[in-house]
Length: 89
Image (cartoon, rainbow, N blue to C red; front, top):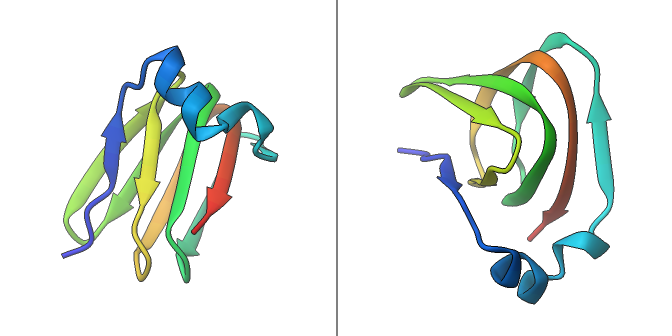
C-alpha cells in the first residue's frame, strides 16, 4: 500500500529541512495522471488539490507538507492553482 503522508510542520521544522531553498513548481487548474518514480517531499505555498489513488482520495491545501512515496500512481485534480516547494529523494 502506497500512503501519501500529509503533515503540518512548524516554521522551525521547515527551516531545518531547507524548504525555502527547494525549487518551486506551479500548475494551473487541471487534471492529470502521475507516477512517482522517486519519493517526493513538497510544501504547498498556495492551492488546493485532490489526489486520487487506489486507496482513495486525499485533499492537499496551502500549508501542507506532503510526502508522496516511490511507486505511487495517482490522478491530480488541481482545484485552485498550485505553488509548491519540492524535492525528490
